[in-house]
Length: 178
Figure (spheres, rainbow, N blue to C red):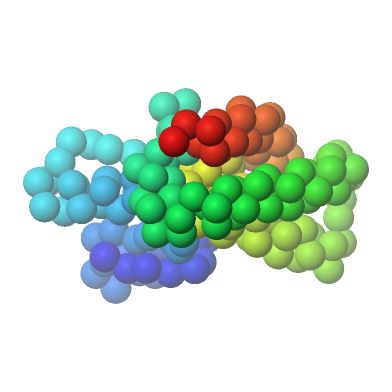
């Protein structure tokens, strides 16, 4: 099993050519790790690929509730609430900026790279806070940025924006569910 920060198909192909059966891109989610371990140890059923998908399955959970419960136990209630609230506020600010981007026209390489870095930052935070489906859309958007494709960026970024309100509500509900 290979672990990499690079999610482009050419990089994944290199790992497979080197003999890796599975390739995980970091940060990895518990769900993805469980899929790989099940497939490797049980020869499990044909599950979705372990690479973050370009399209996100509808059954992908909004949030990893087990991870969030572990995080709450680790941080304590006060720090957990501050962390989730700060994350939501930062994502809201970033989304406001993303909504201003014209995804119907070409974007120069520097602007596309800046957008990729912003998406990567939010994607990493989302992984660390269990926002599974939102993050999966961001990974697909980041992959499009890496490939230099504004055309392929539009759909996953718009999907991330569309799923954010539900993701935010799911995360905020954990603040009052204890």
